[in-house]
Length: 166
Image 1 (cartoon, helix red, strand yellow):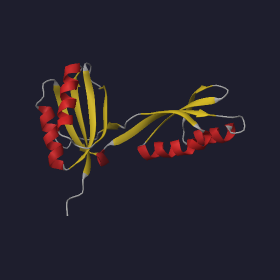
Image 2 (tube, helix red, strand yellow; image 1 turned 60 degrees about the vertical axis):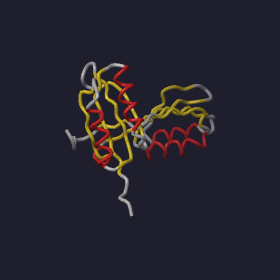
Image 3 (spheres, helix red, strand yellow; image 1 turned 90 degrees about the vertical axis):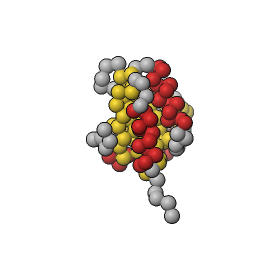
């Protein structure tokens, strides 16, 4: 019987350079690991991007990937964390059809999920929400009876806790 597969978060600080991003994603791609999400955005350091990758793998394989990233030019820092030790949130924009008869019920759902209405017209509302993955799935299911016209949902944004490997 094989050991259970764990989920890990690899967070790499890269120079704000397209070539550095291309090299880092190439290293991740060549490992052929099941990737849960891959996000890129600015970090707290000027001129530095944070590339966050959530992978399902054993610890040794995850460490090999992290070490390969550490050897790369323009990588400033690489951290590995168990997903359980991280805070994760998703963001969603959902355009929903609304009729005057359904408006009250729709506003109750928006209030229940602590979402915001960011745009409205006589026939539709654009709703914005942030939460965990299961929370977002629940929100989308609650909005389905009203008629979802469009949905844009981010990959999880993950902020790691303390580093397990330096």
